[in-house]
Image (cartoon, rainbow, N blue to C red; front, side, top):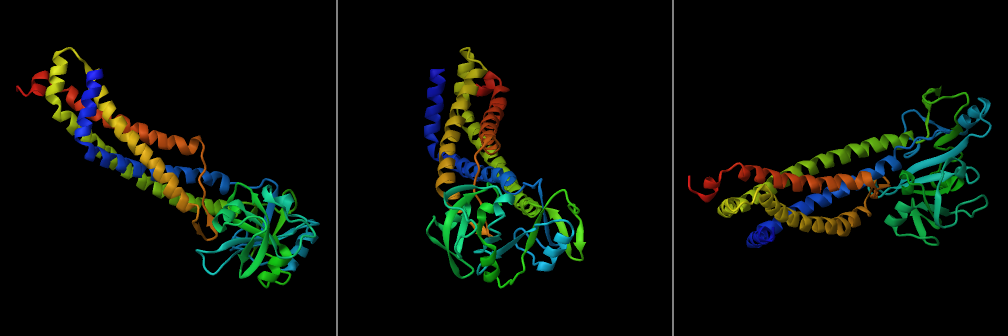
Length: 365
Protein backbone atom coordinates (compact mmCIF):
# COMPACT_ATOMS: atom_id res chain seq x y z
CA UNK A 1 0.00 0.00 0.00
CA UNK A 2 3.01 2.30 0.27
CA UNK A 3 3.04 2.72 -3.51
CA UNK A 4 -0.68 3.53 -3.54
CA UNK A 5 -0.19 6.06 -0.74
CA UNK A 6 2.66 7.71 -2.64
CA UNK A 7 0.58 7.81 -5.84
CA UNK A 8 -2.41 9.41 -4.09
CA UNK A 9 -0.23 12.08 -2.45
CA UNK A 10 1.52 12.93 -5.74
CA UNK A 11 -1.81 13.27 -7.55
CA UNK A 12 -3.19 15.44 -4.78
CA UNK A 13 -0.16 17.72 -4.87
CA UNK A 14 -0.56 18.15 -8.64
CA UNK A 15 -4.08 19.45 -8.00
CA UNK A 16 -3.28 21.25 -4.75
CA UNK A 17 -5.14 24.44 -5.68
CA UNK A 18 -8.39 22.58 -6.30
CA UNK A 19 -7.84 20.47 -3.19
CA UNK A 20 -7.25 23.60 -1.09
CA UNK A 21 -10.42 25.22 -2.41
CA UNK A 22 -12.32 22.06 -1.45
CA UNK A 23 -10.81 22.17 2.03
CA UNK A 24 -11.80 25.80 2.47
CA UNK A 25 -15.32 25.08 1.23
CA UNK A 26 -15.76 22.16 3.61
CA UNK A 27 -14.16 24.12 6.46
CA UNK A 28 -16.58 27.02 6.04
CA UNK A 29 -19.61 24.73 6.00
CA UNK A 30 -18.29 22.74 8.95
CA UNK A 31 -17.73 25.91 11.01
CA UNK A 32 -21.27 27.12 10.35
CA UNK A 33 -22.83 23.76 11.15
CA UNK A 34 -20.74 23.37 14.30
CA UNK A 35 -21.88 26.80 15.48
CA UNK A 36 -25.54 26.01 14.79
CA UNK A 37 -25.45 22.71 16.70
CA UNK A 38 -23.55 24.31 19.59
CA UNK A 39 -26.13 27.07 19.96
CA UNK A 40 -29.01 24.63 19.54
CA UNK A 41 -27.56 22.71 22.46
CA UNK A 42 -28.11 25.81 24.58
CA UNK A 43 -31.84 25.94 23.90
CA UNK A 44 -33.11 23.08 26.06
CA UNK A 45 -31.36 24.36 29.16
CA UNK A 46 -31.87 28.06 28.52
CA UNK A 47 -35.53 28.15 27.52
CA UNK A 48 -37.34 24.85 27.98
CA UNK A 49 -37.46 24.70 31.76
CA UNK A 50 -40.83 24.88 33.49
CA UNK A 51 -41.08 25.24 37.24
CA UNK A 52 -42.87 22.44 39.04
CA UNK A 53 -43.49 24.53 42.15
CA UNK A 54 -44.47 28.03 41.07
CA UNK A 55 -47.16 29.74 39.01
CA UNK A 56 -47.18 33.25 37.53
CA UNK A 57 -50.11 35.67 37.61
CA UNK A 58 -49.91 38.17 34.76
CA UNK A 59 -51.88 39.96 32.06
CA UNK A 60 -53.36 37.39 29.69
CA UNK A 61 -52.09 39.10 26.53
CA UNK A 62 -48.57 39.73 27.85
CA UNK A 63 -45.32 37.87 28.32
CA UNK A 64 -44.87 38.93 31.89
CA UNK A 65 -41.65 37.08 32.66
CA UNK A 66 -39.73 38.94 29.94
CA UNK A 67 -41.43 42.05 28.57
CA UNK A 68 -43.63 42.52 31.59
CA UNK A 69 -47.28 43.16 32.17
CA UNK A 70 -48.63 45.65 34.72
CA UNK A 71 -50.65 44.66 37.75
CA UNK A 72 -51.95 46.84 40.56
CA UNK A 73 -51.72 46.08 44.25
CA UNK A 74 -55.40 45.14 44.09
CA UNK A 75 -54.38 41.90 42.33
CA UNK A 76 -51.98 41.14 45.16
CA UNK A 77 -54.75 41.67 47.71
CA UNK A 78 -57.08 39.52 45.59
CA UNK A 79 -54.56 36.67 45.79
CA UNK A 80 -54.22 37.09 49.56
CA UNK A 81 -58.00 36.86 49.91
CA UNK A 82 -57.91 33.72 47.72
CA UNK A 83 -55.68 31.93 50.22
CA UNK A 84 -52.17 32.96 49.15
CA UNK A 85 -50.75 34.74 52.20
CA UNK A 86 -47.61 35.98 50.47
CA UNK A 87 -47.77 36.42 46.66
CA UNK A 88 -44.27 37.42 45.51
CA UNK A 89 -44.19 40.60 43.37
CA UNK A 90 -41.67 41.13 40.56
CA UNK A 91 -41.10 43.54 37.71
CA UNK A 92 -39.86 42.32 34.33
CA UNK A 93 -39.14 44.67 31.46
CA UNK A 94 -36.80 45.12 28.50
CA UNK A 95 -35.24 48.54 28.87
CA UNK A 96 -33.00 50.43 26.49
CA UNK A 97 -32.96 52.87 23.62
CA UNK A 98 -33.91 50.19 21.08
CA UNK A 99 -34.84 46.52 20.89
CA UNK A 100 -31.41 45.69 19.48
CA UNK A 101 -29.63 47.21 22.48
CA UNK A 102 -32.27 46.39 25.08
CA UNK A 103 -31.49 44.89 28.47
CA UNK A 104 -33.72 42.44 30.26
CA UNK A 105 -34.34 43.88 33.72
CA UNK A 106 -35.86 42.07 36.68
CA UNK A 107 -36.99 43.89 39.80
CA UNK A 108 -37.07 41.46 42.71
CA UNK A 109 -38.24 41.37 46.27
CA UNK A 110 -34.94 41.01 48.11
CA UNK A 111 -36.55 38.88 50.79
CA UNK A 112 -38.06 36.35 48.38
CA UNK A 113 -36.26 36.13 45.03
CA UNK A 114 -33.91 33.33 46.04
CA UNK A 115 -36.91 31.14 46.89
CA UNK A 116 -38.21 31.14 43.32
CA UNK A 117 -34.96 31.25 41.33
CA UNK A 118 -31.97 28.96 41.76
CA UNK A 119 -28.66 30.51 40.77
CA UNK A 120 -24.94 30.19 41.33
CA UNK A 121 -22.99 33.25 42.35
CA UNK A 122 -19.99 33.41 40.00
CA UNK A 123 -18.35 36.41 41.67
CA UNK A 124 -19.20 39.24 44.00
CA UNK A 125 -22.16 39.26 46.37
CA UNK A 126 -25.85 38.58 46.06
CA UNK A 127 -28.48 41.22 46.74
CA UNK A 128 -29.99 40.81 50.19
CA UNK A 129 -32.43 42.65 52.47
CA UNK A 130 -30.77 45.89 53.47
CA UNK A 131 -28.65 46.18 50.30
CA UNK A 132 -28.18 49.85 49.30
CA UNK A 133 -30.25 51.36 46.53
CA UNK A 134 -28.92 51.29 42.95
CA UNK A 135 -27.17 47.93 43.36
CA UNK A 136 -27.52 45.19 40.75
CA UNK A 137 -26.75 41.57 40.00
CA UNK A 138 -25.83 40.74 36.40
CA UNK A 139 -26.18 37.42 34.56
CA UNK A 140 -23.02 35.88 33.12
CA UNK A 141 -24.13 36.33 29.52
CA UNK A 142 -24.96 39.99 29.99
CA UNK A 143 -21.72 40.48 31.94
CA UNK A 144 -19.76 39.16 28.95
CA UNK A 145 -21.68 41.39 26.54
CA UNK A 146 -21.37 44.50 28.72
CA UNK A 147 -17.85 43.57 29.90
CA UNK A 148 -18.61 44.27 33.55
CA UNK A 149 -17.45 42.74 36.82
CA UNK A 150 -18.30 43.32 40.49
CA UNK A 151 -17.65 46.93 41.43
CA UNK A 152 -18.24 48.26 37.90
CA UNK A 153 -21.31 50.23 36.92
CA UNK A 154 -23.96 49.14 34.43
CA UNK A 155 -26.41 51.55 32.83
CA UNK A 156 -30.07 50.60 33.12
CA UNK A 157 -32.61 52.88 31.47
CA UNK A 158 -30.26 55.84 31.67
CA UNK A 159 -29.21 55.33 35.28
CA UNK A 160 -26.02 53.81 36.68
CA UNK A 161 -26.18 50.80 38.98
CA UNK A 162 -23.21 49.30 40.82
CA UNK A 163 -22.64 45.62 40.00
CA UNK A 164 -22.74 43.72 43.29
CA UNK A 165 -22.32 40.25 41.80
CA UNK A 166 -22.37 38.05 38.71
CA UNK A 167 -24.78 35.10 38.73
CA UNK A 168 -25.46 32.07 36.58
CA UNK A 169 -28.74 30.15 36.22
CA UNK A 170 -28.08 28.22 33.00
CA UNK A 171 -31.27 29.72 31.52
CA UNK A 172 -32.23 32.79 29.51
CA UNK A 173 -32.13 34.70 32.82
CA UNK A 174 -28.35 34.85 32.42
CA UNK A 175 -29.22 37.73 30.05
CA UNK A 176 -30.88 39.70 32.84
CA UNK A 177 -29.85 42.42 35.26
CA UNK A 178 -31.52 42.09 38.65
CA UNK A 179 -32.27 45.10 40.84
CA UNK A 180 -34.48 45.59 43.86
CA UNK A 181 -38.24 45.85 43.33
CA UNK A 182 -38.31 49.36 44.77
CA UNK A 183 -35.54 50.52 42.41
CA UNK A 184 -37.42 49.02 39.45
CA UNK A 185 -40.67 50.75 40.44
CA UNK A 186 -38.88 54.10 40.60
CA UNK A 187 -37.00 53.45 37.37
CA UNK A 188 -40.18 52.68 35.41
CA UNK A 189 -42.47 55.10 37.26
CA UNK A 190 -44.67 52.17 38.28
CA UNK A 191 -45.59 53.51 41.70
CA UNK A 192 -46.68 50.42 43.65
CA UNK A 193 -47.57 48.44 40.49
CA UNK A 194 -45.67 45.30 39.48
CA UNK A 195 -45.40 43.09 36.39
CA UNK A 196 -46.27 39.70 37.86
CA UNK A 197 -47.10 37.91 41.08
CA UNK A 198 -45.54 34.51 41.75
CA UNK A 199 -47.63 32.07 43.77
CA UNK A 200 -46.95 28.47 44.87
CA UNK A 201 -48.54 25.64 42.92
CA UNK A 202 -51.09 23.50 44.71
CA UNK A 203 -53.46 26.26 45.84
CA UNK A 204 -56.81 27.44 44.56
CA UNK A 205 -55.62 28.44 41.09
CA UNK A 206 -54.22 26.14 38.45
CA UNK A 207 -52.25 26.72 35.27
CA UNK A 208 -54.59 28.22 32.66
CA UNK A 209 -57.10 29.67 35.14
CA UNK A 210 -58.36 33.26 34.89
CA UNK A 211 -58.44 35.41 38.01
CA UNK A 212 -60.58 38.02 36.34
CA UNK A 213 -60.92 39.58 32.92
CA UNK A 214 -57.46 40.00 31.38
CA UNK A 215 -55.57 38.38 34.27
CA UNK A 216 -54.51 34.72 34.00
CA UNK A 217 -52.30 32.10 35.62
CA UNK A 218 -49.45 30.33 33.80
CA UNK A 219 -46.59 28.03 34.71
CA UNK A 220 -43.37 29.80 35.71
CA UNK A 221 -41.01 29.48 32.74
CA UNK A 222 -43.76 29.33 30.12
CA UNK A 223 -42.77 32.65 28.58
CA UNK A 224 -39.19 31.43 28.12
CA UNK A 225 -40.60 28.25 26.61
CA UNK A 226 -42.46 30.29 24.02
CA UNK A 227 -39.38 32.31 23.14
CA UNK A 228 -37.36 29.11 22.98
CA UNK A 229 -39.64 27.67 20.31
CA UNK A 230 -39.24 30.85 18.27
CA UNK A 231 -35.44 30.72 18.54
CA UNK A 232 -35.44 26.98 17.82
CA UNK A 233 -37.35 27.57 14.58
CA UNK A 234 -34.65 30.00 13.45
CA UNK A 235 -31.83 27.57 14.24
CA UNK A 236 -33.70 24.74 12.51
CA UNK A 237 -33.92 26.89 9.39
CA UNK A 238 -30.23 27.76 9.53
CA UNK A 239 -29.42 24.09 10.07
CA UNK A 240 -31.41 23.18 6.95
CA UNK A 241 -29.46 25.78 4.93
CA UNK A 242 -26.19 24.36 6.26
CA UNK A 243 -27.24 20.82 5.29
CA UNK A 244 -28.04 21.88 1.72
CA UNK A 245 -24.67 23.62 1.52
CA UNK A 246 -23.03 20.44 2.84
CA UNK A 247 -24.78 18.37 0.15
CA UNK A 248 -23.31 20.70 -2.48
CA UNK A 249 -19.89 20.26 -0.85
CA UNK A 250 -20.22 16.47 -0.93
CA UNK A 251 -21.18 16.53 -4.62
CA UNK A 252 -18.21 18.77 -5.44
CA UNK A 253 -15.77 16.65 -3.42
CA UNK A 254 -17.07 13.45 -5.02
CA UNK A 255 -16.62 14.93 -8.47
CA UNK A 256 -13.07 16.05 -7.62
CA UNK A 257 -12.06 12.61 -6.34
CA UNK A 258 -13.68 10.99 -9.35
CA UNK A 259 -11.72 13.23 -11.73
CA UNK A 260 -8.44 12.55 -9.89
CA UNK A 261 -9.09 8.81 -10.00
CA UNK A 262 -10.13 8.94 -13.66
CA UNK A 263 -6.87 10.63 -14.61
CA UNK A 264 -5.10 7.61 -13.08
CA UNK A 265 -7.34 4.98 -14.64
CA UNK A 266 -4.46 3.51 -16.66
CA UNK A 267 -2.41 3.02 -13.51
CA UNK A 268 -5.38 1.39 -11.79
CA UNK A 269 -5.73 -0.96 -14.74
CA UNK A 270 -2.08 -1.95 -14.39
CA UNK A 271 -2.41 -2.31 -10.63
CA UNK A 272 -5.34 -4.67 -11.06
CA UNK A 273 -3.43 -6.79 -13.58
CA UNK A 274 -0.71 -7.14 -10.93
CA UNK A 275 -3.20 -8.63 -8.51
CA UNK A 276 -4.20 -5.65 -6.43
CA UNK A 277 -7.88 -5.71 -5.53
CA UNK A 278 -10.49 -3.19 -4.49
CA UNK A 279 -8.60 -2.21 -1.36
CA UNK A 280 -5.98 -0.37 -3.42
CA UNK A 281 -8.53 1.95 -5.02
CA UNK A 282 -10.38 2.48 -1.74
CA UNK A 283 -7.12 3.32 0.01
CA UNK A 284 -6.15 5.74 -2.79
CA UNK A 285 -9.46 7.61 -2.49
CA UNK A 286 -9.42 7.49 1.30
CA UNK A 287 -5.99 9.13 1.54
CA UNK A 288 -7.01 12.01 -0.71
CA UNK A 289 -10.45 12.55 0.81
CA UNK A 290 -9.14 12.32 4.36
CA UNK A 291 -6.37 14.86 3.78
CA UNK A 292 -8.75 17.31 2.08
CA UNK A 293 -11.33 17.00 4.87
CA UNK A 294 -8.71 17.05 7.63
CA UNK A 295 -7.37 20.36 6.35
CA UNK A 296 -10.98 21.56 6.05
CA UNK A 297 -11.67 20.45 9.62
CA UNK A 298 -8.73 22.48 10.90
CA UNK A 299 -9.90 25.50 8.89
CA UNK A 300 -13.45 25.05 10.18
CA UNK A 301 -12.41 24.87 13.83
CA UNK A 302 -10.25 27.95 13.38
CA UNK A 303 -13.11 29.91 11.80
CA UNK A 304 -15.60 28.74 14.40
CA UNK A 305 -13.57 29.68 17.47
CA UNK A 306 -11.80 32.81 16.24
CA UNK A 307 -14.59 34.43 14.23
CA UNK A 308 -18.07 32.94 14.66
CA UNK A 309 -18.11 32.32 18.41
CA UNK A 310 -16.13 35.48 19.11
CA UNK A 311 -18.66 37.60 17.23
CA UNK A 312 -21.83 35.90 18.47
CA UNK A 313 -20.72 36.33 22.09
CA UNK A 314 -21.37 40.02 21.51
CA UNK A 315 -24.76 39.57 19.86
CA UNK A 316 -27.96 40.52 21.60
CA UNK A 317 -31.49 41.02 20.34
CA UNK A 318 -34.59 41.77 22.40
CA UNK A 319 -32.31 41.62 25.41
CA UNK A 320 -31.30 38.01 24.75
CA UNK A 321 -27.71 36.95 24.17
CA UNK A 322 -26.56 33.59 22.84
CA UNK A 323 -23.82 31.25 23.97
CA UNK A 324 -22.67 27.81 22.73
CA UNK A 325 -22.93 24.60 24.74
CA UNK A 326 -20.51 21.71 24.23
CA UNK A 327 -21.92 18.24 24.80
CA UNK A 328 -22.53 15.05 22.81
CA UNK A 329 -25.73 16.46 21.33
CA UNK A 330 -23.86 19.41 19.85
CA UNK A 331 -20.60 17.69 18.84
CA UNK A 332 -21.86 14.40 17.36
CA UNK A 333 -23.83 16.00 14.46
CA UNK A 334 -20.70 17.91 13.38
CA UNK A 335 -18.61 14.72 13.60
CA UNK A 336 -21.31 12.95 11.60
CA UNK A 337 -21.04 15.56 8.83
CA UNK A 338 -17.30 14.88 8.59
CA UNK A 339 -17.73 11.09 8.42
CA UNK A 340 -20.67 11.19 5.97
CA UNK A 341 -18.76 13.52 3.65
CA UNK A 342 -15.71 11.23 3.83
CA UNK A 343 -17.76 8.09 3.17
CA UNK A 344 -19.78 9.42 0.23
CA UNK A 345 -16.72 11.11 -1.26
CA UNK A 346 -14.97 7.72 -1.36
CA UNK A 347 -17.77 5.30 -2.20
CA UNK A 348 -19.21 6.93 -5.34
CA UNK A 349 -15.90 7.30 -7.26
CA UNK A 350 -14.87 3.81 -6.11
CA UNK A 351 -18.11 2.23 -7.38
CA UNK A 352 -17.76 3.90 -10.77
CA UNK A 353 -14.17 2.80 -11.35
CA UNK A 354 -14.54 -0.61 -9.73
CA UNK A 355 -17.24 -1.57 -12.24
CA UNK A 356 -14.95 -0.89 -15.18
CA UNK A 357 -13.09 -3.76 -16.74
CA UNK A 358 -9.30 -3.82 -16.96
CA UNK A 359 -9.30 -3.28 -20.77
CA UNK A 360 -11.53 -0.23 -20.30
CA UNK A 361 -9.19 1.18 -17.68
CA UNK A 362 -6.23 0.59 -19.98
CA UNK A 363 -8.06 2.27 -22.89
CA UNK A 364 -8.09 -0.84 -25.09
CA UNK A 365 -11.81 -1.03 -25.82
